[in-house]
Length: 408
Ligand code: PLP
Image (cartoon, rainbow, N blue to C red; front, side, top):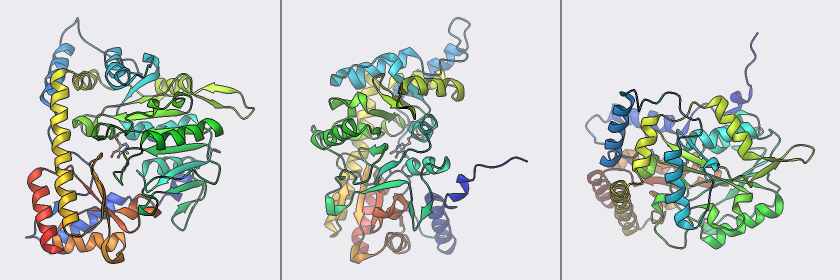
């Protein structure tokens, strides 16, 4: 008799986006003539940059020749991509990394979800709240999150980030072993300054906390005081793993590529207190369970850093950030309170008149035919907020803002 991993049974049945899809579908069935604009799910809409497409076409042709054929690749990624990443994303900011500290993957969701494989189930977890749901759910799947009681997991320390504290998390009062930080933040679109991030690195150094730093939206940062990498902070290599993604940077949500930095200086401990290099464990895990990202994809990712690629990626990011500006100004003009949207493609809206997140979601859908994401779906402190994304195309963004103005 095969026994299941019963921790899966503790997970709530409905995933946020399938709940939303059901509600949107029932609206469409009852209102077949209305055009619904989706500013809900965080997928991109602009096509892959030409430089990336050309590199991928060429890579396909490589595979058709005997000299340039590539079979199984290194699980850690090809050195042509790793070296390009180190040079452009890190050395350019004064951060030195060895090639063996960078692991190419099929995206930040897989890596942030899988990293727990190499960590003991007894660790306590800290998350800023609200946050990208994968961190908690992946911990719940192996029992590390404890049990779900009144909407909160018993072994998770929730660190509220709301308008009341200006979305700046305070150091937790309860001990955490592993801490997830996501900046620029999904869903609030807010960021931390270098000084604020330093506070967290110092806390981790003083308390042997392992930080999982998800910088999937790093490319959207506009302010010079906002760090792009946690390794810009002194000592961070001793305490942090950093996750990056090409998904939102360069339209790779369908192509699939990201990477994770696991510095050699980073250690965790056995129960007896013996130090172990996390890099060694992650390498071992990847070599056994991960097949590597395809050669074609990695050549496409490499092209993101070519002069042409950089220019095209910048244009895409400017496009989404212009959407964000249009939305922010439009919504504020309607009297709504809006956070984020200046260093991230997300706008975090305070629901008016004390409406709950779901109530505001429904009013927006039924009265303006716009789909947002209820903030409470990202954690208890998301109640009373709604997330809109700037990933729509310009026409839809303008129409959505015009509708909102009329509606409000
Ligand atoms: N991390 C955050 C904070 C995200 O919002 C997302 C996607 O929405 C991901 C990671 C997933 O990125 P990827 O597409 O690289 O798996």
